Amino acid sequence: MTKIGHFSLSACVLIPLFGLSACDPISATRNEPDISIRAIDGDSFEIAGTILDFPNIDAPELGQMCEVGQKWEACGLQASYELEKRFALGPRVCKTVKDFKSSQDCIEFLSNIERISLETGLAVAVETASDELKAIENTAQNLPIGMWRGNFTSPKEWRAGQRGEAETDMDPCPILVVAQGAGSAYVVPTDTAYKSLQNHPKKILERLCSDEDARDMGVPHIKHSSKK
Image (cartoon, rainbow, N blue to C red; front, top):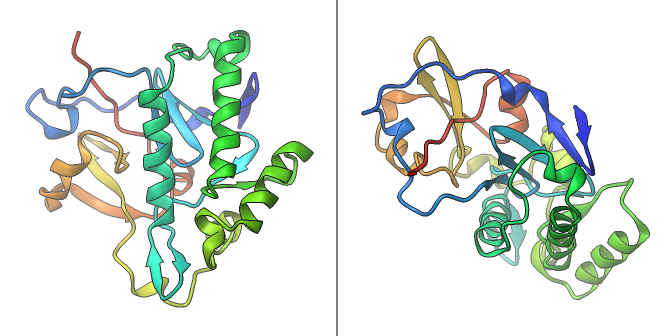
């Protein structure tokens, strides 16, 4: 993991994807307007084929559930969708990987997203986060709001294998690893291809619970094409 400005770069995602045919649903052109930055989960995103991690927050993994009252909620998916919404509705000040180092507007925009994720209880502050961010987390915990309304396993412990009592009986993990030529790629719920792939189970090789699992396996994120 290397650093770009204030953000962490996962070099493994630069592995080239194997070719896709134009009719393959995986490579289908996006229907919505192109946006240069896409959420992977609640604390990572992709821009220009490069995946970056927010350095000061840790959000629940895509397959993670949180207990609120007598119900289990898909807090990992919720954090992902909220991040995607902020990118779609926010100013387009981050257009290249270089912006994360040189554009103050981009850096401030992403830093504000970290604060919002903590304010809404959809992420926790990492140990190295500033006192300001930790204070925001404490406020969300005391309200409580988001994940703090109930019980949840810290994302770090969840990635290490710790699960809530009822999580093992939940739906299978949402990240799809799909066949692609001689290789494979992973698809997350915010990807346009995700819905159509769910209707083509023969294309699914396996399901994963976090994008970190895919990265550790050396599986790249699906490549998007866009209308020009």
